[in-house]
Length: 245
Image (tube, rainbow, N blue to C red):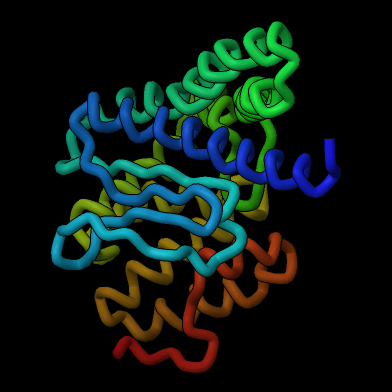
C-alpha cells in the first residue's frame, strides 16, 4: 500500500475513532437527561451557541482535535454526580465495542482500513481506561477510579464536578461553593491547586471582590510555571489588571 494512502487512512481512522468515543459520552449524557453542549473530532465541531442553537464550526484549538464530547446537566441535582460517572465510562465502552466489530472483519478480509478502524478505537478505549493524567484532568477511567478510590480523591472529584456543574448551569462563578474551592486549593497536586485558585479567582471576579481577586491572581501567577502550558491556556485569567470590569 502506498505510504501516502496509509497515512490518509490512518488520519481518517483516527478521526472516526475519536468521533465514536466522544459520541459514546454524548449519547450516555443525553440518556441521563443532560443537555448537548459540545462535540469535536479533528477540526470539525458542533456546539450550542449563545442562542441555544446547535451550530457547526471549525475548531481552531489544536489541543482539542483529539476529540471532546460534552453534555451538561440542566439543573444542579445531587444525582448528577452518579450520572457523570456513567457518562465517563460510556466513551471507552463505545470505543471497545466499535473496535471489536471492525478488527476481526479487517483481519478476515485483509482490509487495512478495517483493521485500522478496529485497532485504533480499541487502543483509544484501553488507554482512556488507564488512570493517567493529561493536563488538568485524569483520563475517563482515572476519574472514575478516583471517584471510588478513597474519600480524599472522591472529595476532589466531587468538588471539581460541583464547581464545573454550577458554572455551566448558572452561567456564572458568583455562587461557587468556597468549601469545594478550598478542597482543590489544599490538594497535594499542584495542578489541582491551580484549578482551585482559578475557580476562586473566577468567583471573586464575578462578585466584583477586587481585594480577593488580586490575591487569587497572584497565586495563579505563582503556580503557572509549575503546571502544563495546556492548563494555563485552558484556565485563562487576566494577568494585566485586577479590575472586575
